[in-house]
Image 1 (cartoon, one colour):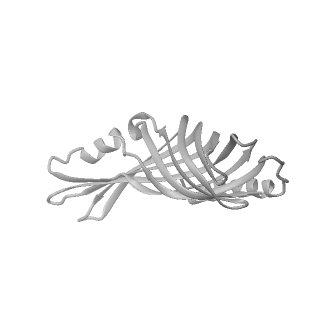
Image 2 (tube, rainbow, N blue to C red):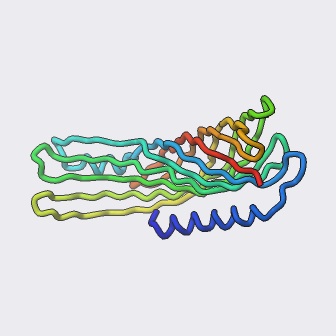
Image 3 (cartoon, helix red, strand yellow):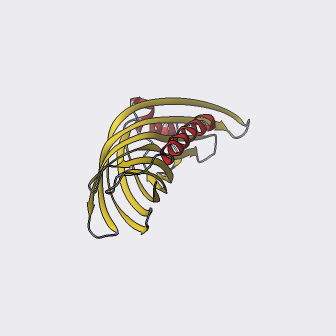
Length: 217
C-alpha cells in the first residue's frame, strides 16, 4: 500500500475513534472502546511469485522470508458481557524472496504485501473479574500487492512488475484480555484469513499474533 493510502486509512480510523470518544458509554458493560496492537504476521509468496524467482535460473540460490511485523487499529462496541462488534484496519507485513545465479548474472526479488480492513463479531467468556477469553468470526476486506524486480548488476539495469489484487474473505481468531485498570485491557490475539488470487499472488493463509491494548470510553 502506498504511503498516501496508508495515511488515508489511518486518518479515517482516527476520525472514527475521535467520534466514538464523544459518545457516552452505556451502563452494564456496554459502550465504545478503541484498540491497537503490534505483533508478527506470517504468509507465503505464492506459486506465481516463486515461479518468477526460479524462472531461467538453473543454478540459483533462493531465500524466502515469511515473517514480518504487523500492526492494527480498531474501534469496537460491547453490547454486554458476552458480545461485541469490532471494525478496523490491519497491516500484515511483507513477505519477500530473492534468487540469483551463482555467477552471478542477475538477481530477482519478489515481494507480497497484505493489508485489510476488518469487521468481526466477538464472543466474550469472562473467566474472572479481570480475565476474558474471546473468539472472533468476521470478514477481511483484503488488498495484496505483489512486485517482482529483476536487476542486472553489471549494467545496474532493473525491471519491475507490480500487480494488485483485492477481495473479501472470512477471518477467525481467538484471544485473551486482562483488565489492568478500570478502562484499560491488555490483549493477546491469534487470527487468520486467506488473501490473494490469480497467478501473480495466489491464495495464501495470512496468520498473525498481536499484543495490544483496548481503552474503554
